Amino acid sequence: MAVRGFRIRTDGWVTGAVVGAVLVFLLAPVVVVVLASFDGGDSVAGRAFLTFPPTSLSLQWYFSIQPRLFHSLWVSFLVACFAAGFGTVIGVPAALGLIRGNLPGKTVLSALFRAPLQIPFIVIGVAFLQTWYLLGDAFGIRIAGSFLALAIGHLFVATPYVIGSVGSVLLRFNPNLEEAALSLGASRWRAFRRVTLPIIMPGIYAGALFAFMVSFGDVPISLFLASPKYTTLPLEIFHGMEFDFDAAVLAISTLIVFASLVILWLIQKSVGLDVMLRSGGSG
Image (cartoon, rainbow, N blue to C red; front, top):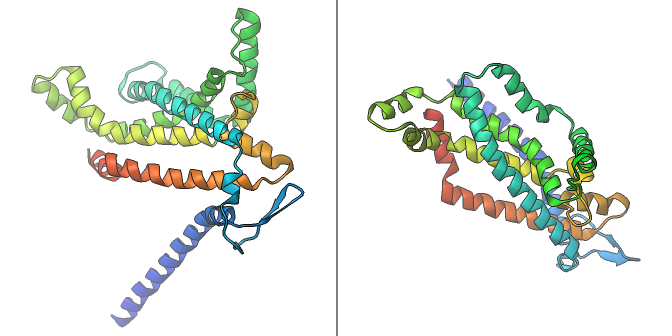
């Protein structure tokens, strides 16, 4: 018994050490960025020199954030909302058709919907850029460099995340629940709205969240589809760090980290996503 208890305690220590190491590996870069953004540092010839851990605390880099970074942040937010919103509008019916429909060639259709996840994003960016120019030459539709051109490119890669997330929930869905609602006199639309939709809602939330994050953090597609008027924040940071280091990038990155934590906390408090996931999984 003593040996067994010692083994259990040892296994607990090993598990804790592994989990702790993984957490340090995942969170260390974020901690470095956040703490370095508060370093007083020195500015010599227009270049910032920071130290980690910070030797002095200051907010000077937060006050040096250029308006173009805030503008690009707003563009990224709008594009990500477009990709998540319309990706949900497209992805939910597509997932319902693929999982519950009797469509001919359903396997091929499923593979086509997953194709954007298997194509390098830089290839997608080149393909869409060429498409917009071809549309302009053939039909006079000049949308290259516009917000719509950028948002459609992000929508292309965001939609499969919604389809996959909703589809995984539908695979565990018990059709007897819907049949019971129909047998009690509910119409098919009412049964879908009152029974099916609440059960697949966790998949919809998760898919929309994944779509938003993929769009918000994209660089390769935006590299080809963005314009000086519509430049996303990751692309602005990429260009800003390409030839020099701008300490304001650390400051706005820290603001995004804290804003993300606040948004996730609000979602957890208002939606109760963990409770919905448990109820959806049991369905």
